[in-house]
Amino acid sequence: MSPTHLSHLRLPKRHFHALDLSRLLAAIMVLFWHYQHFFVPPVERHFNVNRAIQPWYDTLGWLYENGHTAVQYFWAVSGFVFAHVYLSDPRAHGRFWLARVARLWPLHLLTLGLMALLQGIYVARTGTEFVYHTNDLKHFLLSIPLMQYWGWQDNQSFNGPSWSLSTEILAYAVFWLALPWLRRAPLAVALPFGAALLGLTLLSAPDKDVLACIGYFLLGTAAYGAALKRWLRPASLLPLGAALIAIAFAFKAQYRGDDAATIAGTFGVLFLMLAADMSDDKGRLKFGQKLGDASYGIYLWHIPIQLALVLLIDSIGVPRDIARQPWFMLTYVSTAIAAGFASHAMFERPAQKAVFALWARWKTRRT
Image 1 (tube, rainbow, N blue to C red):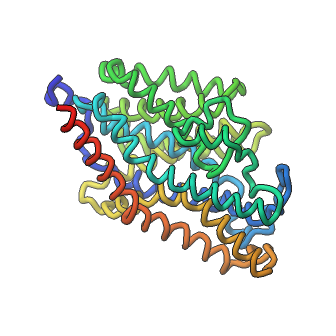
Image 2: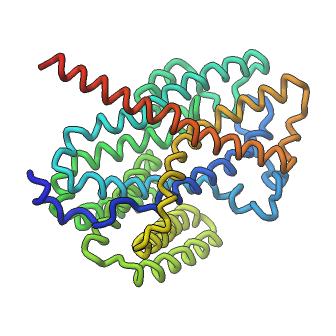
Image 3: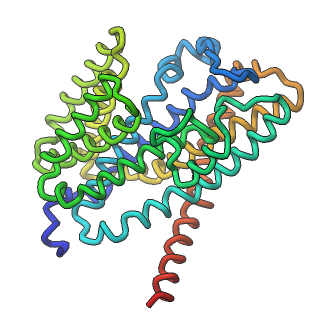
């Protein structure tokens, strides 16, 4: 299949810089959601934290309470970006999984091993695990291939946030298998299936997190299909995005409206970011690409950094209430963000190149 034959499946923009920037902001949202972990004592059960004790709660309360919704946003953005990258690529089927392994696994395996070590130290000191308690051999072995949240898990384990990567692997598989049909009609294929899966999550179907991930991903792909048809332009994206965000707040005010609010809010923000990108003819948002590169590192490094800080303050006899101080929160958030940038430049990119080089060398030897 020639590139020319598939050229109609790619929007003219090479990069979506506002989306890149939004990925960084979404990763930072997760930092605030997990900040509550600093106040969890060494207990062998779930512990509810009074989030109002966290620094600057009056100002940052929405982030502390809703930062977890960034995960769904990541899924939707991934669906849009994958459609942009792979629908028009005639070699997509052959190199898809190599690119995924090179991008995801090196940092995942590094932080998985580090969390196993840090949790071992924490257990030796306290007699129980830090926040994530299902750190047994079964979940470690499942975590290596990112299969730890496919429905057979007891709970989140080790580097807890990696659960969302585990579900996203299944969304990648669906996308990869559906590529021939998505190329024929990306909107017509992705929209009904994505909407149906999210509908099942609203009904609390079994394994709803897996269904939700695939649903968000496919609706992100559907958004790309709608953009290809020129149905989504800045003139329509702005009012549609604003309306969806207003609907999200309305759902949030209703009992049991959280999942519906997250769906509406996710695509409201996605549409507003797309409007910004499509209006950016002069490339003023180009800086967003490099900022977005840090999001994966921030996401996987922030829990190991958090546990390392807890071990440090416990070892020097400082009460964990020190986390109520704004300077401590700013130090933690800044450290996690810096780790994301350093990780991308010093580990993730070199690791990607190494994986591609090893694959090329292996192919050469076989031929």
